[in-house]
Image (cartoon, rainbow, N blue to C red; front, side):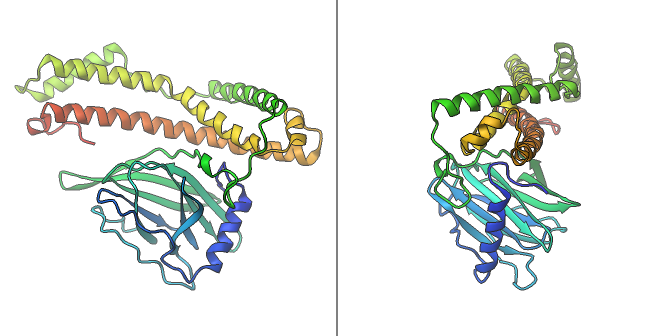
Length: 348
């Protein structure tokens, strides 16, 4: 079972009950963003009793978007005229508009006769963009895929996007799923910092034992890449400024790639800190070396979830690095009007 790291399984069960009790509202309570350049999001679910909840800094109580794949209710027909159509395999779907440039937390919940599963993630949508999030149950695991939708040369293109879960700090203690943080006393902060230092070392050791994929491009590889690209262009030539920026883009990508593990560790540490800030003193005091069986079990379950969070976050950071590079290369080719002369230009 895959659950949100910042919210307990109990929170998802509560959301499931709310969904069932308010089932008559098949279109939900969330009003589409009114901005003319609002982003559009399609939610696809291939699981039963699926719902998408929307939160932002002004709405710490969930706004619902409707229900999908419920045997007693007709699926919501919310649509926002998206350019890219849904895949033919979509079992149930709905579409909404989101305010551009606004940090939004989206929470997915699904429940069946023997399970409750959910996923929360943050999204700051760009103006006018289209997104698609697909939620599936594969075996005993929930799977969530976020993609940006676009159309290039008349073809529909889906570009994977990172899934970062950072919560909604301004909502802490203000809603049923946002746990109340305990006071940051000096004693608690010392305990929390000590726990985080030890766990950061442990997670780093786990990573060092595993092979980390190399994404950086060496100077020799870059020279070869440029030579091949020039050969493909034939008689079409570009000024030195283009190739200088081309090299700089790869240098920027190398720098971002080198910082992937540190960035993932930063997410891991911050999420772990938030969980500890809502933990009782008596539990914190035993966290490093628990003697109570209940606390030992609680710590073990937390660490298991946090390892999975770190692994997933590393993947998202990698996707982020790739997308940044693709975007920079596309902007470069657009700036020099490369696509008008070279069909293998960069597009994003």
